[in-house]
Image 1: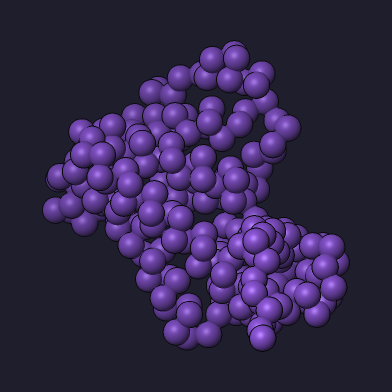
Image 2: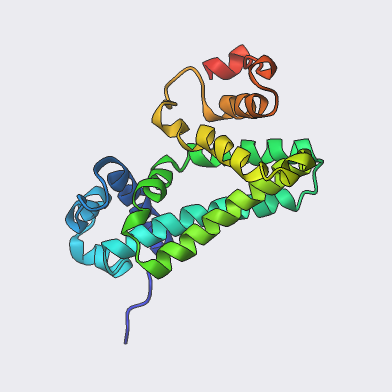
Length: 206
C-alpha cells in the first residue's frame, strides 16, 4: 500500500522553496547542488527528492509561485474598484510589501529565468507581462493622455525599475523599511522630488 503524504507535506515543500531561493539568490542556480539544498533544509537528499524530482522543478516552483502571487495581487487590488490614484497607490504599496518577504524569490525570477526551458519560461514570463500590463492600465487610468502617447508602459517600466532593485540596497536592519518606502516610491513617481514627504519618525525607527 503506497505511503500517504505527511500532514506537513505542503509546509515542508514551502520550506524547501524558501531555503533553495536563498541559496539560488546568493550562489546562483547553476552553482547550487541538490545536496546543498538538502543540507540547508536539514533533510537527506533522498527525502528532498520525495518533495521535488530535481533542482529544475524547484526553480520552476520558486519563479512561478512568486509571479503568481504578484499576479493575484494585481487582481485583488483591481477588484476593489478604487479611484485611479488610490488604485495605483495601493498597487505600489502591495507589491513593495510583497517584495519585502520575497526578496530571494524575486532575485531568482530576475536572474535565473534564463535557465527555464521554453514552455516554462514563456508561461512564467507571460504572467509577469500581465502584471506589468495591470500596472500600465493603472497608470493610463490616472493619465489617459499617456496611453495615446504610448507612454503608459514605458513609465510603468521606470516605476518597476525603482521597485524591482530595492532589494539590492534596502537592508532589513536599516533606518527605512519597505512599508516606509512604498509611499515614497509612489510620491516620487506621481509628483517628482517636490512631492516626496519624509516618513514619520516612528516608521524610520521601527
